Amino acid sequence: MLVFRAFFIKSILYMILVVDSGSTKCDWIAVDSKGNQLFDKIRTEGLNPAILSEEELAERIGESSVLTENKEKVTHVYFYGAGCGTEIPKKSLDGVLHSIFSKAIEIVVEEDTLAAVYSTINNETEAAVVCIMGTGSNCSYFDGSKLHQRVLSLGYTLMDDASGNYYGKELIKGYYFKHMPESLRELFSKEYNLEADVIKHNLYKEENPNAYLATFAKFMFAHKENPYMRELIKEGVRVFSKNMILQFKEELKNIPVHFAGSVAYFAQEEIKEVAQELGYKVGNFTRRPIEGLVTYHINKLK
Image 1 (cartoon, helix red, strand yellow):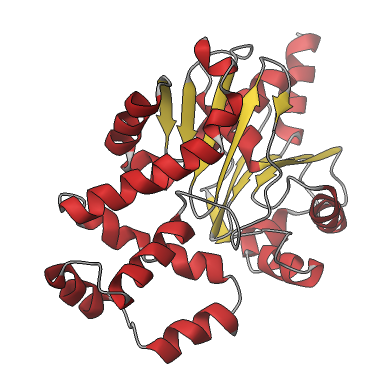
Image 2 (cartoon, helix red, strand yellow):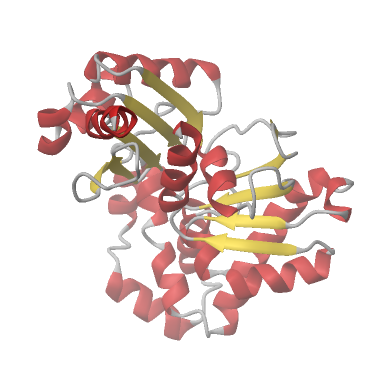
């Protein structure tokens, strides 16, 4: 009876925040130690510490009244996000989270690739190459216990192949260079404001140009049956595969490649075709890693 009562109290006292953040949006789920969800999933703007200041990060978190009202009840924070793969941005966000959730027993900040790993692998010790294709993109090798990267990401300007912002750039260029078929150009111009001054303002004057570019990708998937769009998707996946996935050529002989993120989820058919071309095995797809993360952390606390 005493053991049951102690566990029950522990369950009530724990408020565990599991967080999955991209550059565009950030999902928060609060659970107790038994995995019971404490309130509806919270969505804030993306919290990428590589492109946002500490003040901006704190402001975005503070915009959620639920997080603000419960901040002193939070006991654990497990944050996985874009921009957390290098030490300086990671420390910046860690400091912000500690200042807001000051009563927390544990706060962990990790790169978004680990979220993709924990939500796609079939068991905790499975080795796999795991890719993210969302607003940005990344790729790592998980050996069953540790994460390995052979390419240090330099961000959306130079890298992020096959991501939402990559495809946004390709669509805009295709429109302006008139490579895009005329029928698609007409539809594209009706759906978006493609005036040069508007595009340049969003790219060079507004925050998060990568997130702005990613908004165009939904047009590509809405018209995926068009051969131009299908080849555009496949070419992005080819570039990503050659630059990132094939860095792990030896490992790929024996392990699958898993994918996380909305771009990968909607491009499954094209990814499988490119994988066959280049000789690697496709594994699992997950659109939103956060549900798998909740299960993973609850199991770790038991």
